[in-house]
Amino acid sequence: MAKDSFTVGLGNNDSLTRKLAEEDYVKFWEKEAEKLQWSEKWSKSLEWDPPFARWFVGGRINACYNALDVTVRKNGKKPAILWEGENGTSRTLTYRDLLDYVCRAANTLKSLGVRKGDRVTIYLPMVPELMVSLLACARIGAVHTVIFSGFSSQSIRDRVSDSKSKVIITADGGFRRGEIIKLKRIVDEAISDLDFVESVLVLEHAKIPVEMGRRDKRWADLVNAASNICEPEEVESTHPLYILYTSGTTGKPKGVLHGTGGYLVHVNSTFKWLFDVKDSDIYFCTADIGWVTGHSYVVYGPLMHGATQVMYEGALVYPTPSRIWEMVERYKITVLYTTPTALRMLMKYGDTLSDSKDLSSLRLLGSVGEPINPEVWLWYFRVIGKERCPIVDTWWQTETGGTMISALPGLETAPMKPGSASRQVPGINVGVVDENGKDLPPGKKGYLVIKAPWPGMLLSLWGDDEKYKTVYWSKYPKMYYPGDFAIRDEDGYIWMLGRADDVLKVAGHRLGTAEIESGFVSHGAVAEAAVCGIPHEVKGESVISFLVLKEGAAWDIRLRDELVQHIRKTVGPIAVPDQFYVVSKLPKTRSGKIMRRLLKAVAKNEKIGDVSTLEDEAAVEEIRSAFKELEREIEGSKLR
Ligand code: PRX
Image (cartoon, rainbow, N blue to C red; front, side, top):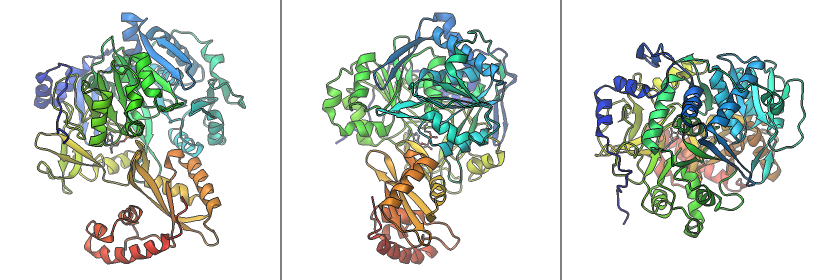
């Protein structure tokens, strides 16, 4: 029998922090804000004009200064990045190196006409220059908008068109599982007719030939020649630091807009409470900077604490599945922060793989991005952490900026329950409510909500305040709605139960069903499409698609392969469904909504009885007949 709780701490026992936070969360965050370097102190800690929050109003700050100069003044020789490429190449950059490099890149951006408030799109692999590019934008008050280098040209096109970036930073190519992804070529395809893009700065990383057009400039030519002195631009606390696009329930991805002061405060404090990183630590977060975890806990969090971290370009299981454990041994990594998908994949290879490496340096383990199954949690705890290391299962979102629910060993020693994300972070007010927004008693499943503003909270959606209001603040007018199901137990521990909306989490990546569906219908052979997610042993969820073909289109392997390529191109490789079902019509409610739960049931081979209880009475009959019809139709339509 599995024990239901474990207590392993770092010996920290600070009961005051939670008490202060409960007494007055605004004052509490004000105290936390004092831990950063401000060039001008704020006049008002919080301006709350629901649903818009402005933190530390009147304050002036620079994100890059807090991330780099603060440590350089103390000890510039401290290694900031221990970078490793997939093929084994390595580079070390100290805080001083990083600051010089960032200043040169910042001056380059200036020379390309980038000014405070301008957007810069960054599409780079996990190389130090990716971190340098973000910080260079922050240094001059430009707004970075990073696109994960696994995204397709169509995704880049949508995001660049929305953010109207003047400059794009990319590389000739990046490495993944022994292959070179031709990034520059993908950018060329994406922006060929986007005239507002003035320059494309190209890093030579993979050393492959690229075509250089009139807007293209080589990174080395400009950055190496630029001055390494660049004064940080002191921006208002509420000045946008970045836009990061993420998937939602409708249409195209939305640009989550984060400010500077509040965001940095949230990330700075949570990084400390989660990991308590000291000078002697070697920290490794496996997230790509293309996702919010990378923004908060690879770039800003660790750097503001002067941490030394490992940065890796490539797949964790390449060239062999023991790659990650070899890295733990080689760098003597002390804090490891990764995803349940990576852990499930590694767990499948068995314990001998990790047992054959020296993992004794590890002292703390983290998980992020999706619910972690209790058995995976226990494996992480026992096999990887040898029951010595606390585990932080951190719940948060692109929109929240930083962690909202987690165990906090940097603050307190509290029991950990495998599968629960633990309690709310101090200063965060989390609730579990019913459909009407009423608090639910312990043990009852409901919707997670955040009841008060927090410093890392998004400012809005880029260029779309109305959508911001509708998406997050219309279900419950005075509470932020993240879109997750949860249960709170008697001890106040939160158990996350997955998404309550049409957002999928595939291998930790957030995908909107609508996004994939419009990808399908943009192909000439598809009339209608519906996708849903079903549980997957490793990826957490996998995508299943139901397609109605246009007159004259025939379903065969060729068309299937063509559609796979089409989805890779229009949405991205992670969105490619694992299964395709071709049907003559999609089951819909009278109001025309696709019955996704029915589709899910079909894909999971569930019985109709299981579904009928979930739908409202009137729809049951309709579902029953649609289900039968579907079952008949999908026979023979599956081409996996
Ligand atoms: O459903 C929750 C899930 O990931 C969503 C947010 O996704 P994204 O914006 O991509 O950010 C991921 C990295 C912070 C949430 O709404 N999620 C994230 N962390 C957890 C989680 N679900 C369960 N447990 C977690 N620890």
